[in-house]
Length: 321
Image 1 (cartoon, helix red, strand yellow):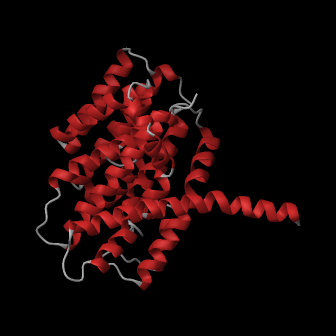
Image 2 (cartoon, helix red, strand yellow):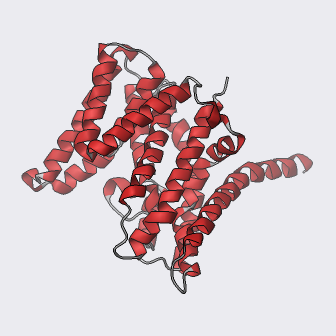
């Protein structure tokens, strides 16, 4: 039976991300001196939730090449369309510091830029680099006996931490190489993905406890005490949601937003920034961010609807022909 509370949690998560981008990140980028410290904490919760949900559903699979094929094929079409729209719009309506060239665009549409270096068509798409890396690593880890996966998870975290240390000290003058290695390992949020996997397994044993504590320590070392507390809080909420203990998240609006959250995430940021920039000819006002928020939801709805309706129309025409 489908757990609507998880979908509702997705809805909350994407709204937190949009609120951060339109009410804080825009002003941080284009209004010098603006601090995002308080609202940034809220956005991290959205990211933690998304990644935990991904890890939760990854753990249900069997890994291997088919796992990679299935996951990438589900992510890529919308991503390609969103990338192309954003690239073309920002070529005609320049967004300072956010317009990229054709070479970077080509790197983006094949997920290469985050691994080998290059600008993102949309800065929010850093998440895709983490997702693709995690998909590849999970395709291997899920082939391991579930009893021993905790060792693989800890090894994964240790490998990232080692690359981060070596990059920071530029050992052997290979700082760039270690940066690429870090990206290929999934970035600094992999602990959240692993926590989602542990929640799915629902097994309390010495291995899972050690792995969970390692994830917490990893986040503490990488992100500090406050974000460690946030991740633990997110893990507790995620545990409650997966056991359907938070019925308010089954709200129809949140469930619907959760259903189009991927489309919203892909298309919202740079186009929303352009909208705010066009509106603030006589200075920024808070209502402009509200307009961008509504636009982000609407843009996600349109992208999602296009992917649902176009295949149906093509199918109908084919049948008639």
